[in-house]
Every structure is written in C-alpha cells, then in structure tokens.
Image (cartoon, rainbow, N blue to C red; front, side, top):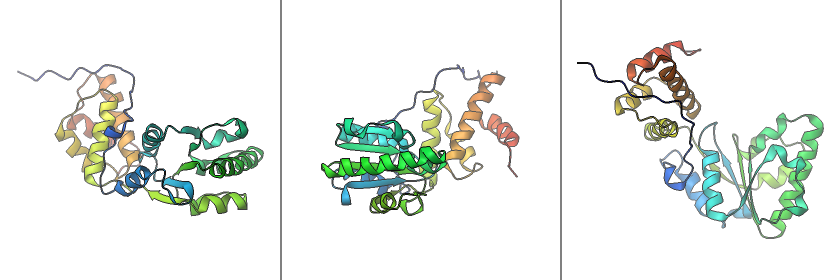
Length: 233
C-alpha cells in the first residue's frame, strides 16, 4: 500500500521574525553578539553586513524589538522630514543600494542621510545600518557622509555552514507552512549552492512544484526541480 502524499495548500508565507526564530551558528554569532550589545556600540553606529537572504532584515526586526527603534528603507530617505523624526534609534536597511537610484534622487538621499546621521547621533541616539557589503565598499558619493558611515562598528554575517544552512532551509519551509523530512534537508545540503539565496530559491521552486504537480515535497521531487533549474552543471 502506497504512502499517502502530503497535503499541499496554497497558503500565504508567514515569515517568523522573532529572536527565538533566528538560528545562531559560527557563521553569524559575532553579528548577533554585536547587535545585542546595543546601545553600547562604538561611535553609536553598527553596520550589519552580509549576502542576500543572510538574515539582515530578520536581525533588524530583532533589534527593533530590543530597542523600540524605527526602521527605514535607506532608498526612501529623500521623502523623509528629518526634523519630524522623534525616535532616538534608527535602523536604515539596504544602504548600499542608494547607489542604484537615479542621479538626482541619489544626491538628495545622501544629503538627507547625512543630516539624519548628525540628527540622531547629535542627540545621543544610535544607528543600525544594513547592507550587503562592508562600509568601506559602499558607493557613497558625498565624502563627509562616507567618512561618517565608515566609522561604524562592523558586524559581518558570513556564508552559511551546514548547521546554519540546514536551519535556514527548515525555517524557509516552515514559513510556507510546509513540514519536510530530514532526508530532504540532507539531500538539498549536498546539492545546492552554499548560499542563503540558493536556499531561498530552491524552497520557492519546490513549493511551486509541489502545488502544480500535487505531490509531496520529497527528495525525488527535489531532484526533478534541481535538474530544471538554470545554470546547474
């Protein structure tokens, strides 16, 4: 008698963002410890750096719960009235993507960020700044701003080890309300690229494949999906 297939429903993704949902491993422990030293950061600033899907936004949410601070998208700063910001502690996400803005908007955004930096630090507040690269590699055109941001303490999230990548895969499936077997996790660990972005993509593709084919998400299905993904050898 064949085993019944797992019921797969097209349910919304519910991302768990609490501190208890963030798995700590040697790949990120230094960043977690630096975050938890708030508000005792050197110069009042911490730059949280790491690759796409490394958990930066998750840690920003953890920091917000810890500090009661305000989270802003760095790319939208030009629309902010700095004088109206009452929070003492601010997190700015995706700061290195300011360089992708149109030239005029980029200039306005960097000038606004410069004034925000001085406004927050001038009243004894703190800044948490996230980006894929370290501050020395941020493409900031305004020299005074680049100098100030470059003095931030740096917390680096590194590529995942096996323990962390396993936990990330399990969490990504759980966010989609999918329970998967340890065999599937081991199968994926041996075959996907060693990155958070690859984990995120394969979970998305497996979810879609399970729904479209009305099949359980098993190593067999994973093998079919991985063969169909582009740029695989």
